[in-house]
Length: 188
Image 1: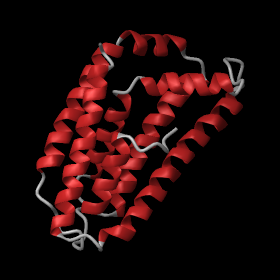
Image 2: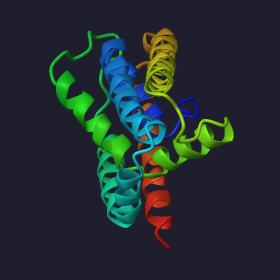
Image 3: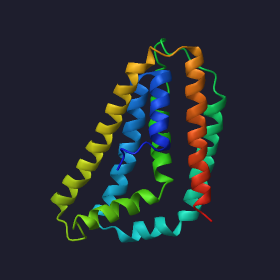
């Protein structure tokens, strides 16, 4: 479910290009952690939590849209970083927590997990060990995708010059802004 490149994938690509593979993997770890928590809710049948999340869908979308809007503008206006310089190592914890927060602001994620689990015949009758294995698999798969994504992006990192990085920032900013518009548009 993490494979389609959405706003977090775009963020992972940009951060890998500007700050290195470690930053991209931290973004992936945050997304995988958010996916793990949402998959746990779906797999363990915690309907009261999923109902609560569904009841707060409007506020979550507004918060997510606002965060994406802020990140999109900030990314678009960011000054290009020398892609050949060593990545910044500070703020990894902040990147991790921000990514978890962004994952949580998309309540569609939990309902996607519920739908996929139901389609696979994995209803509320899962044993604890089966549900745990499923949730660990979701986490591992999501993290693996982001490790592969950031590792692939590293290949292009040293080939970009200052102007290329400016375009990366602009394109990433526009894609993140489009995600914010979609989040706000889904409220209509």
